[in-house]
Each structure stands twice: as C-alpha cells, then as structure tokens.
Length: 235
Image (tube, rainbow, N blue to C red; front, side, top):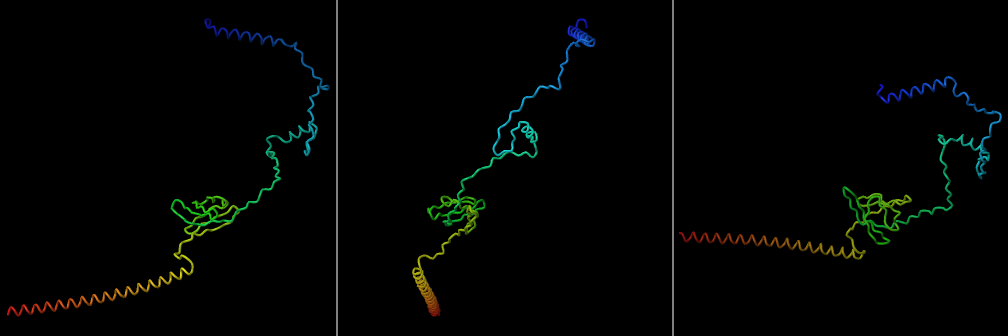
C-alpha cells in the first residue's frame, strides 16, 4: 500500500473531503444572505402584444384571449383537422362531346392468348388493329373497344354509350338486280348443257356396251367355226 501511488492519492482526497464535511457541519457558509421577495410588489411580466383584427375571423385583439384560445385548441387534439383552403372555380368546364362512331369492322382474330379486331375508320379510310381496352385513333378517340366476339365487337364511349360493329361476310352475290338475272339465266343454261352432256355420255356408254357385246358374240362364233373346221380335218 505504501508503494501504490494511486492508492495514496485516493486516501489524500478522501481525507480532504472529510475535512470539508466537518467544517460544513460546524456552520461554515451561514453568512450567505437569503434573497427576500416582496410578494405584494412583484415585478410585472412583459405584456403580450396585441394582434390586428382579421376580417371575417373571430380572433379577439386581446393577447391573453389569444393565448387562451391556443391553449384550448392543442396541436395534437384528436378533433383537430387541417385547414383546407376552398377552391374558387369561376370557369365552367366544357361539356364532353363524343363524336358519332363512324367505323367498320373488317376482321377478327381470336387466339388462346389474345384477341384482335381490325377496324376501318370510314372518315379517314385508315385501318388499325386493336385489342380489348384500347381506344380508337383520331377523332373517334372517345370510343374504347370493350369486347371482341367471332362476328362482332362492342365499343363504349366516354359518355357510356354502347355501339356494336358486325363483321360483314361476303355472300357471293355481285352486282345489281340485272346482273343477278343474267347470272341466273347463265346458271340455267349451264345446267341444261350439263344435263344434255350427261345424257350424251349415257347414250355413248350404252352404245359402247352394245358394240362390245356384239364383238364378243362375233368372236365366239368365229372360234366355234374354226373348231369345227379343225375337227373335220382330223377325221
């Protein structure tokens, strides 16, 4: 312990603290005077400045009333809501005008993965391919393709109008009524010619069969005559 410098320092410091505590117990420090406060003549606190009147508000000009109002409405109150400034709209929005649908369905492609519709814009004469959910191009962009079926498609406008476009299938009839009459006459003529050709073919077939039978009978007769001649020579 005598050779330990740190221990010796601790012992000296402890001794000094004990001496100071003993002096305080004997009355050291009693000469400090207490501050006397006159409760009747307390110094005035600084006055809170008044606020200017705000037009259209119920805030009073008295600063104390303002503080009381703030205290009555704490920042983290449950019923406190953020201030939302009203939006003043003086201009009326223009009404949405959707043009009439002028289109023609020219083709439909349906695959297991996706369906496509080819639609012709009859105004611009442009054909485009669309999928379900795609709006039409150009001035008819207010129409959206809603569904695709094998022979028709359904389109819906932005103002909830519905239009169906059916696929026009070629029926084989060309030209006007006069052309149709000519085609009918030609068809009848062709049918008559076909019947005549069929009858001729049947007649030719019948003649061929008859000639073939006669030829066979003739050959048989010749063969029999030759056999008789051979038999006569042998005798």
